[in-house]
Image 1: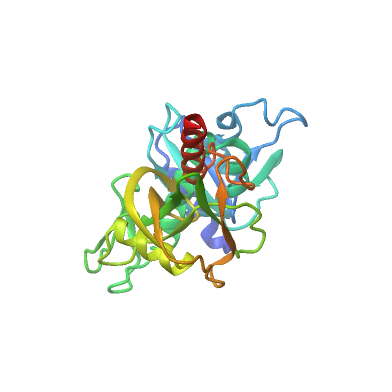
Image 2 (image 1 turned 135 degrees about the horizontal axis):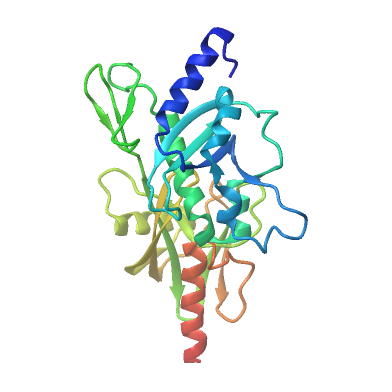
Length: 293
């Protein structure tokens, strides 16, 4: 984004005026990465990720002409100060001593607890980016209520952050679990089956439908276990167990590269329980079965 010289000062003053707390901190995003403070080699994993992700609001004076989006996010997320999420339109040459990390990579390296703040902020950024204009009348929306609501001044439509509910299910058959590998490029591990909940559908109905569509089998005794926010870009994963009820395994090639039944004592590479609810479902079920044996 190139800002004409005549607009630069105006944009800077608007951005600066929106940050009322001089002790506020910022999370900075660029494309699909979060910008961290650079650390000496070898110290990356010895330093709490929160120490590297928060930037003082004073940095805004150096980068505000490159800022595409600046919005406040919930303050009770790991800092005693106000927190802002910043999205850069271009990389500022003045921003030095940095380390840009893909958000998914940060999750894989640090686990979900350390990643949760970045994940929440990235969802706020994505929501704001894709709802700048009213879908009803086309007017530009305004951020109000400390950034938690977008309001159309033209037709008074309100837009709240959107979350897409999904199910993720571990299908079990005594000491066997059904695991699948996605056909997405680069997918190397096996995991649970998952999918979006469709309009007018309960979560349990979505479990039965997704399992049948992706694996060609029926399930019963569907039971909810736990949930997890999944900010890629903005899902809420509802985790379930379900028992195998019949049918021959027939993986859908449009969704899965392969799928199979695995004994709880001999699993393929699966997600870590520190990263995803899928890993937690697998670990907890297998541990229970192995303990009983």
